Image (cartoon, rainbow, N blue to C red; front, side):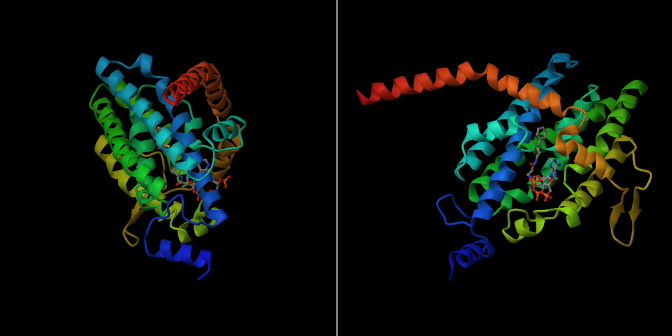
Amino acid sequence: MSPEEQFQAIVDAEDKIEPSDWMPEGYRQTLIRQIAQHAHSEVIGMQPESNWITRAPTLYRKAILIAKVQDEAGHGLYLYSAAETLGVGRDEMQELLHQGKHKYSSIFNYPTLSWADMGTIGWLVDGAAITNQVMLTRCSYGPYARAMVRICKEESFHQRQGYELLIRLCQGSASQKAMAQDSINRWWWPALMMFGPHDGDSTHTEQSMKWKIKRVTNDDLRQQFVDMTVRQADYLGLEVPDPDLRWNEERGHYDFGDIDWEEFWRVVKGNGPMNRERVAHKVKAWDDGAWVREAAMAHAAKEEARSAA
Ligand code: BYC
């Protein structure tokens, strides 16, 4: 058996590939790309929500929001660690993100304009994230799959807190309910875009499915998300902003309208409403934090010298 055949046999047998195992270069590069993008998404994803921490309406909501944003930082750290096991440095990944050479999820390039957006992000954005990420707990690469188990548990908590926030708003005054409706109007389509291009336009799906990095295609996950979420919107008494949305008895799924793919690619290529601000803020945070990293390195060097003495 060639190394490639042996590798594929391990994958097909549902065993995990570990960092010290032989792997095709394409597999390694695909994982670095996907895991780094995922880590960057978690970290950039802190920005839209942290924007509302100082304006949370109660201490209770503020505590939840701070904890959620902190969880996202933690997810970024697990994922950067998983990517590092593939031989890429954390500083290198940061540099590529700062230079615009690494992507992150399109969803975080939209602004958070109202308090209801905190609920909608939890409900729709974390909801879409879990729909996509549950399959990643079964990814063939061990360190990524294991990181995803913990991340999914936390994301499902995030999803529920967002939905609960919206239940409260929708049971509140007419203007609170209108704020919730305005929020779903703005986030619905970008949330559907999170799953990526149609399967026919997806560069990586076929190979990633063969390697069992991905287990379900972009379109199938998107359908799963729509089917689950429309019922949740009904319960809230909110309308999904899609005139073509209807239950298809024959398919056993909801049919839904066309996604604006021009908007998707515009955002992915760096020209969405908030791309420049998001990256500029990230670069500033990295530069402002340089002294912390330097102090930690100096401390580690001192400790090492002390234990060597
Ligand atoms: N945005 O061949 P395809 C979170 C790119 S964070 C931008 O289908 P693939 C949270 C794609 O990279 C959630 N780019 O790709 C955090 C590729 O370009 P490259 C983040 C996108 O990888 C804070 C090209 O389009 N989740 O939960 O097979 C607060 C062709 O696509 C997007 C993850 O990262 C997009 N939406 O499938 C709250 C999950 N979609 O790289 C919540 C892990 C596609 O060739 N990632 N592109 O230049 C994945 O599962 C897969 O990477 C994707 C895309 C399903 C996203």
